[in-house]
Image (tube, rainbow, N blue to C red):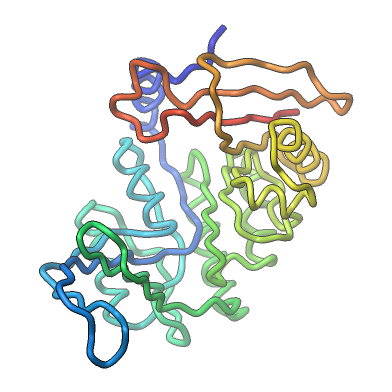
Amino acid sequence: MTNTLTLERATTIAEKFSSKRIVVLGDLMLDEFIWGRVSRISPEAPVPVVEVHRQSQALGGAGNVVSNLKALGAAAVPVGVVGDDDHAARLRGAFAELSISTTRLIIDPSRPTTVKTRIIAHNQQVVRTDRENRAPVSAAIEDLVGDCFQEELDHADAVVVSDYGKGLLTHGLLSRALGLARARGLTVCVDPKMRNFDSYQPVTVITPNNQEAAAAAGIAIDDHESLVLAGRRLLDSIDTSAVRGPIAARTASGSTRPPSPTGSSVTEHPSCSASARAVSSTAGCSITHVTR
């Protein structure tokens, strides 16, 4: 049996989102883009002068996750923190355009709304500026966010935790949120950031990239075998059913390796088949899926 993600299989999976309510707990941010052109160098310093033609914005971080879930047809509920500033209003406006409620966004006057501004000229990014506070949120804010999350779980079908290391997902909040989700039997998917993966449990699946997996497992990932070893080490170290991560691949179909002595197995899922590559930017990649 192949696990290739064909267009037909992807459509079948996507159709199931329409009946699901998914709570997204994580670092919300606004992605701002300034578009222009460069025709001269500044006389003040050896840097290009960008003549601005237009500006645009998009939901970023956990907000992008919410936007993607909405596009798939799910009812997505963002839970997170914003500042008491104009950027928070813009963030709420972006959610409103998608008919997404922002009642679970907690205002923290002590920190700015996270904004990443990219200046682009001739389709090349010239520089990026970040407005953010990565310090952990206060205990009071942590409690408010935890209360909002808990209230949403009664109506949730699944949870996504999206960590960008901006201070919201403290060990205390993760412990409370993940424990509550497990008690309700909900599927929980975590996109991690912390080096200390002990905080990301209990979960259903965790999706580190290679760098994050290597840091958490203490293994240099430079080939398929070391990748699988890192995945198995993570499985043995935290309470999760699966570890998923991207690798470069040349295989044309899925392949499953025998279970390890600890009872885990490894499955490679090519991200797209030949028929799907025309509409996918992930051609040539696969997902390595390590399960118990």
